Each structure stands twice: as structure tokens, then as C-alpha cells.
Length: 143
Length: 143
DNA sequence: TCTAATTAAATTGAGCACAATTTAATTGTA
DNA sequence: TACAATTAAATTGTGCTCAATTTAATTAGA
Image (cartoon, rainbow over all chains, first blue to last red):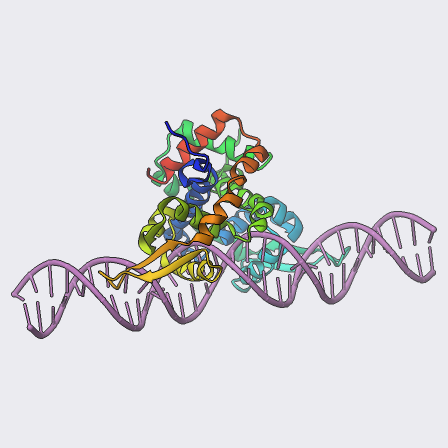
């Protein structure tokens, strides 16, 4: 086998690399569908949380998505500019910025609802593999 | 169960989201180790290919890493500025830019070789889970 | 009640990603 | 051989990510 001390540094022996590459490839594969509703992938997952939660602050949104205010602040301003969300300071604690779904944001849900099914059709994974992947990824995420 | 027609849009029902989030979390966990050798994660995986291949052009490097010249060109210029790689046009086909490892780049390998082991120690996955994840991710990547 | 510590967003700056376009070199074909 | 098509990098512009810092509001402790 002649396993070299440097084999640990080969790209084919990394788990992080296919994770990083597959993530980017999957996100990329969403683009044609997301283009139709004028969202980037990150904007799309923010909207998913908004469709479900209706209203929450930036910190809570960040906890849902593993993103911080450095990423979310400019992104939320763009979503606000599109009329999809509203950004208002909390009256009880001015430090908190409350993000809320608008009617326009709610309406976008109907145009987005077909995307998960269309994406699933593109997947080459079996149901079992998808379930295994899902649980392993959430284990990595510590959940 | 009252499964709603919009359940497909819930973040918890996505496979793409934990993939995207876990990838970022894992890349982030490399930072303390990569800081010691002054590489970013992307620079690190480029160096992994260089340590293995010694010399290849930008297109080949991009195929290894699923990255294009838009990402690689500025990154390779930074690695060149650090003295880790050399960038030279092919004499037989001037369109090709050949990237080669330098002695300094080779020397960095010794400082990097402990990283995979240290990262593996941080992982909370079993050997079986890691193997499953690996093969599913490469299936997504079409390999 | 001051004031120090904490907290939440925002800001700043560096570094990717990637689509789209441009530039330059090479190849294939009439 | 001309020259259109193709190919490889580089460039441009937009949009994340994220660490570190700043700003402003709130909370907790002496």
C-alpha cells in the first residue's frame, strides 16, 4: 500500500473538501430556479425563515441560519428594498431590529413553493442516502 | 399530521441548508489551524493540490477544486506573492498558465501535515458516518 | 444612582464565488 | 492560407462570509 506520511494532506482523503464543493454545487444548481423569483440562495433561505416565523430579530434569524449581522444586515436591506420584509427597531429594546414579512413577501411564497420539488427531481440521491446525509449534517451542526 | 402544502419550504425540510451551513461551519473550524500557516481555506485546498501534483495549469486546478479562473487567478497571485507557487505561461500553448510548487511551498507541507489529524480530532462523527458522508458527497459531485 | 459590563446591529475590510465579458492564442475548415 | 470557432485566463461587477471593531442601548453591580 506504501501509505505515505503526507497522504493525510491529499485532497481525496479530505472530508471537508467534498463538503465544501458539494455545498457550492448544490447552491449553484438552485440559481436557475431562484433567478425566476429574483432571489440569491442566501436571500432564499432567509425568506424561508420569514415565511415560517413571520417576525423575528436579526440575532434569532442569524441563529437559525448560522449567519451573523455582517452578512444579514446588508442582505436584509436588499430584501427590504424589494419590499419583501420590513425592518423596524423594537420599541421595548432599541438594540433589537425586528424583521417582519410583508404582504409582498408572503405572496412570493406561492411562486417559491414549487422550487423544492423541482430541486428534488434534480437530485441523484436515494431516499435513504438523503436521510443519512441529513442526519449526519445536523450532527456536524451539533443538533 | 396536518401536513401543509408549504411544508416543503420549511428550512428544516431542506437538504441543501444543512449542507450549506455545515460546509461553512467546518471551513470556519479550520481557521485557527490555518492561521498558523497564514493560509485561507481556499488557499489551503489549492496548496493540497499543488503538494500532490507539483505542476498543472489553471484549468486543471479548477477541475480538481470546482473553481474557475475568476476565483483562482487572484488567489494564485496571492500564493505567488507569498512565494508558495510560481506562475508561468506554457511555452507550447501561451493560453495556458502553468502553476508550479516552489521550494517554499514544498516546505510549508511539513507545517501543514498535522492539520488533518488535528481536525479529525475535532470531528464528532463516527468512522461509519464519515465514510457514508464521504461517499454521498462524492455522489452529489457526480463522482 | 452611577458606571462598568454586556448585548445587538451596524460597519469595515479582506477574501472568496461566480456569472458574464474580454483578451489573446490556437485550432479547424473552407 | 484566411478566418471563423474554440479555448484558456484574466477582468469586471455583484453578493456573500466572516473577523474585528464601533456604536448605541440595556443591564447589573458597587
